[in-house]
Length: 351
Image (cartoon, rainbow, N blue to C red; front, side):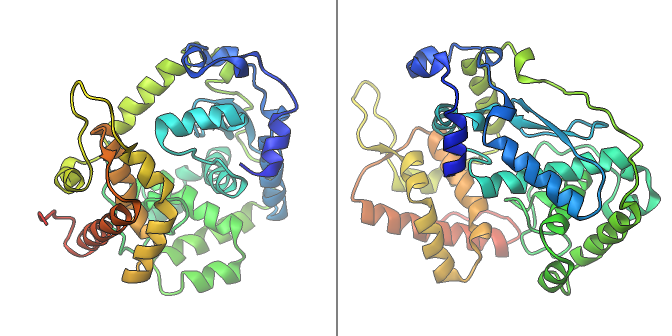
């Protein structure tokens, strides 16, 4: 977290900060007593509003703390996950979910700009326009349970991880809007020259110029699933969240991971560091190493890396051996699997 975030979240002392982890997990979300306005997040919301004003957009999405990142359909507002509001909760999130989505100012702003895209779409009912559907597709399209993106496609912008724009027409619009909002026309035209995605950016540019200074027809300030209304405990929250994301980690890596790491032995003390923790700790270093070897951007490697970390946690694997050897062996494995993912039509071949 940024220094700004640390300072802001310490302005109040909360009773639950004195609890150990087991006790903390029994606290209900509604009992946390957090207010977005009293945290570093308020500054990011204000920055988002300034960016929108700078583009002549009259909508100022209202924001509130909830369970996850989301923008409700038909409401020009944004739910922000509660765990970002306090360092203790960020640590808890990292322990249970491996990472803290939006846990620094830069990452938080990328997510806010994406959700702002959804909010602007709702505020101006853009999805009702024929031109919108011709450019992005119908938002009525059912969301897939899982999607396997094509990293080689140039029809979509790159903003959040895992080629998220490819998951659904609504996400395609939100991602494209975020790129448009965060870069000047000269920047995105240069970056996406020759890409099919450039047509989408030009569409948003023209549409936002058309809407500049006009009042939006949808102005609801309603808030959905606000923190004070959520009665589940933190334990229940993470149990449901882990169950939801567990199915997204494919088993195709099992053979590779079991060669590199060790399974726990029943009835015996655990040895070594958790493999998922080991990989998270060396994530940046390994990505940079493999990117240098292969010439692939780090964001391309992240798709496979995230899946391997998640599957290592599910298998409860342990990192036994010298750190140098494990890092090198995993870097080789990541290189092989990423290359295969990109250039063999996503068919998995045993190695």
